[in-house]
Image 1 (cartoon, rainbow, N blue to C red):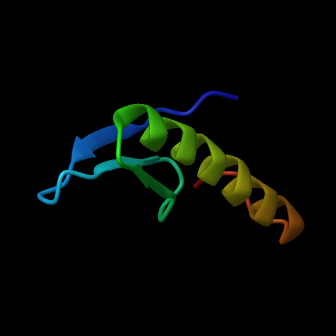
Image 2: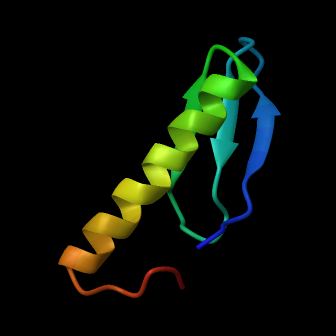
Length: 59
């Protein structure tokens, strides 16, 4: 399954990645690549928790 993510740089220079399809699913990193790796992990974890709680994968 593929999800779109947004990636922006915060005022403090940290890269912030967010998955709009999964509210609250955010990753960040010192580099853009690190933020992408972290959001991929966050998405997997969010989906795992939603599956355990029998919540739809995304709204």
